[in-house]
Amino acid sequence: MVDHPHRISGLLFAWQYLVTGDATLNPYRLWWEYDRMGFGPGIGRNPGGHSLYWGFRNLKDGLALGWKEFFGWGGISGLFLPAGILSQLRNRKTWLPILVFPSLAEAYLTYWMGSAFPGPRYLYEGFASLTLLTSAGVAWLAGSNPAGRFARMRRVTTGCLLALLVGYNLTLFLPARLLAAKDMYGVSAADLEPFSNQEALALTPALVVVHHQESWTDYGALLELEDPWLTTPFIFTIYSKSNLAALEAAYADRRLYHYYPDDPGQFHLGTR
Image (cartoon, rainbow, N blue to C red; front, side):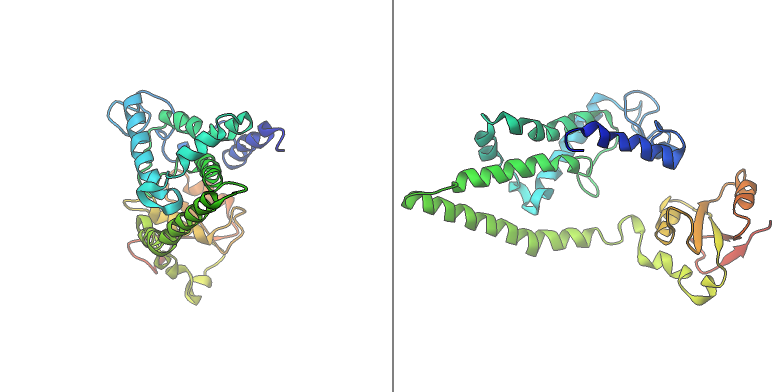
C-alpha cells in the first residue's frame, strides 16, 4: 500500500459511493450545495462566490492560527523549522513528504471555507511535514554524536528548550484549548439525556423525525446515538414533508416519532 498511494486515495471514491450512491459526490453537498471547491458564484457563502482573494485570506488566517496550534507552543511553534529546512536541503529523499504541507495549503486556496475555528483544521493533514522538519531540526541542532564540550552543551540546551516547550503545552496551552472545545457549537451531553431514560427506551425501536429549528446541530448532536448500519434503538432523520411517507414505508418495523429540540423529553407519535 505504501508503494502504491493511488490505492489508498481510491478509497475516498469507494467511501463516497457507499454513503451517497455516487462515487464523485461529496457528502457535504447533500446538506450544503454551495459547500464545494472551486471559484465563482454559487460556491461558498461570500458575496459573488469564492475567489482567489478569499482563498489567500483564508490561508493567511489559517497559518496565523496554525503557528499557535502547532505543537501547542504558541507563537514560536515554528522555532525549529529553519534548522530542519537547512538540514534537509541536500537530502532529496525527504523533499516529497516535506512538500505535502505547501501542496495542501495551495490546494485549499480553491475551498471557500476558512479555518479559524475550531482551529486550522484544513491544514492539519499537512502538519506531518512540519513535524518531520521540526524533528530534523531538533536532531541537527542537538547533533547525532556530539563530541567536545561545546557539542555536549548544544545537545543539553536543545533538550532543555524542547522539554520547556512541551511542558508549556501540557500545563498551559492544551488545558485551555480543551476547555474552549467544550460544548462547541452548542452540542453537549445534555442533548442526549431525553433519549437515555427508561420511558424513552420503551418506545424503541424508533425512527425519530427531528424538527430542527435554527441550527443543523439540533439534529447532528443526536447522531451519537446512531450507528452507520441503522441498527440502534433510535435512528434519526430531519423532517421533510415530501420524504415522510417514504421513510415510514422504509422503516415499517419501527415506530415513528416527531421530536422538537426546543421541547425536549416529548415524543409525538407519527401516523402510518
